[in-house]
Image (cartoon, rainbow, N blue to C red):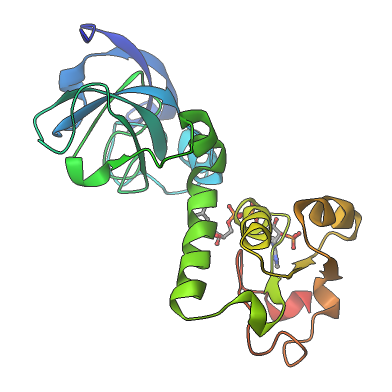
Length: 229
Ligand SMILES: NC(=O)c1ccc[n+]([C@@H]2O[C@H](COP(=O)([O-])OP(=O)(O)OC[C@H]3O[C@@H](n4cnc5c(N)ncnc54)[C@H](OP(=O)(O)O)[C@@H]3O)[C@@H](O)[C@H]2O)c1
């Protein structure tokens, strides 16, 4: 597939005129070098993307950069034998929108080491709906299983349960067969959390660490500060 000379990308700058971001025409040679060029189909808007785009958080470590911490798309060019034109791939993290140009561009150029084949059974849009938050929750599940924690060991607590990582953790752990107890500061979201599969929902202030989850509490989301207990 021919890559156009110019395309619009969401680029973030910090220069003499301050912190600013927006769509601007760029060429492939303005992107960081890399072995794989992807025609981007989907990216997500993570909290970190909002911080990076507005400048409200110190996310970027060099300027200018294309925003977007993840991307899913199709390979259009590759000098790495692991990837060929037409391969469905995705990338998340790996410095995207921190130290190198990210996913908010029709064409994304990445190191082959940052790219993974699109997992079987997951469409590009679905992969980006799960996004980096879902990937993080899935890593938590993987770590639990690596540590031989199984549903048979009893219920599992997810804190910050209504958050991005927390809600996906409730969903993913439930689908993996765990009985998830959702711990949240938002009493009015119990219905939402039950809908995700948590049979029990607790307010943060009711949570008792030495209680029934003491052996197997999995903390997804923020560690609960004493002020909320
Ligand atoms: N999103 C990602 O892709 C990603 C990737 C890697 C790591 N992380 C890390 O994972 C953590 C959660 O990220 P997130 O994207 O899920 O954030 P988020 O959407 O803002 O969710 C955080 C949740 O934590 C709870 N919370 C907020 N303030 C709190 C406080 N002061 N005390 C106790 N609980 C509080 C809230 O849930 P309740 O109201 O339900 O209690 C909130 O919804 C962050 O530390 C983030 O850096 C996120």
